[in-house]
Image 1 (cartoon, rainbow, N blue to C red):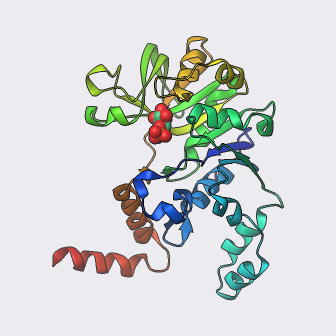
Image 2: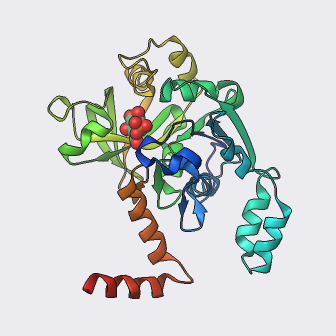
Length: 294
Ligand code: G1P
């Protein structure tokens, strides 16, 4: 069993319009699209709670009221789950509002990830916090726990090595100094994050994946940033400043991860969840094998 970290707050930016998943996202926020019967957002929150988080701050938009609706306590839903014998799930839903606080902050203009994180400032307060991008699902809470452990004297971001043809989808770091392999994997220093470079200009093959353990020191940095050429306040620009002040390190992670912000990644996550399902995983696998042999 994983033990809780000292970070108790997680900020989940969820104000984006989900254009890669249109037209479904005309009516359903991408964060609520189901992975089997569970909204993706629920899985991200489970990951946070598994790392000891008890305050979830969702940065959403007034145009996505369904996100707030998901957290309204509905005793009849809990009772229906109990009748179906799904006690653990009923218990999980009951926790919101009791031992887990869910706060909502609105970002009503699409001004970038840095701006979204900045919107959470007064709700987060003067505490370290995770940022969790809900387009990515992680296999468990271990990455958050590792980041919190590494961020004892500052902040830490999760990195992954990707093939060159994928770097332009991400923030890419420029490693500096020696790396070392610690208890959680390879830890590196860096002095720059280049947001979505073209492959030939990327400083490395190490990209930021959507989990960050930050300190409130990031807020004044975000406040002082000028918008990037796209007009957005980039979290990557604030991370560059923190990294140059030696207040930020990167952990190269090998955690199982899915990008569900696009149709194929979403489908892979659904198939994975189907295969792993305790009740019908075996039948689904048999069907899938038979289907592929056709
Ligand atoms: C964001 C960040 C980027 C990071 C990525 C991880 O980009 O800006 O630095 O590498 O998440 O998924 P987005 O995918 O929101 O465009």
